[in-house]
Amino acid sequence: MTWQPDGDAMARRDAGPSARIARRFASAARATLAGWRRRAGGRCAVCRGWCDDGLCACCAARFAFAHARCGGCALPFSPHPDEAFDARCGRCRRAPPAWSRAVAGVDYGYPWDRLLTSFKFHQRLDQVDVLLRPLLARLHESRETPATHVRVVAVPLARERLRERGYNQSWELARRLARALELEARADALFRVRDTGHQLGLQRAARAANLRGAFVVTPRHAAWVRGASIALVDDVLTTGATAQAATRTLLAAGARDVQVWVVARTPES
Image (spheres, rainbow, N blue to C red):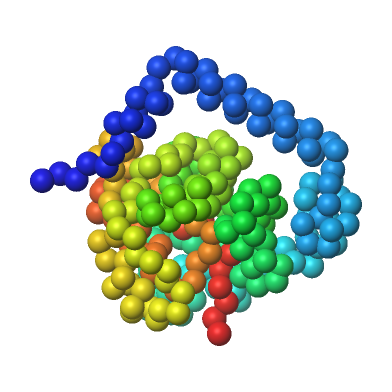
């Protein structure tokens, strides 16, 4: 028996010329408003001083500086000068993760923890551009800057959590990343079939067990995933259990490889 999500209504809504015109108009309006905001300036999200684009130069230099990171787990790492940009730490060499590469913008800590909490739980969608800036910088600095064939997918929320929050924070990040990098993105290519509850407080093995079988690739996007290089986007990478489960689902559906892109990486305690 093939599982089929309730996607008919979504497909009807997205079909037709009027829907396409409305999406193009909304996209143009967002771009215009974003341009006005950039020209007008505003307060820095961290120090609240006046700046041009949400994060002043002093706070960017202090809190958004680039670490050398392991290309497997995205933890800070000091590779040998002769090693590649995405060199792996010893642990990732011994036990490689399911994904091919992980990229993180910053460590999860002040002020990013506060900004992410506001964005995730308090509808502060205006902070998305600031949160994405370090990640975009890391992607542009990489010797493997995303090519146009990479397709962007967000870690999905369960329906109950989506109804409660009103939006999926990972999709809000993913769609803006895709737009900035001129990549394809799909909001519903990956679907969470059951609510796994909060992962906070669970150990690595318990998180992995909790997430087993939690994701599926939706049938209407199976061909879009098959053979593609996928960028899986989330807000924070902690133990990697969610990213591992989602990556294995995408690979089982035929994805050629999966990269993990996150705003922040939780440091090891």
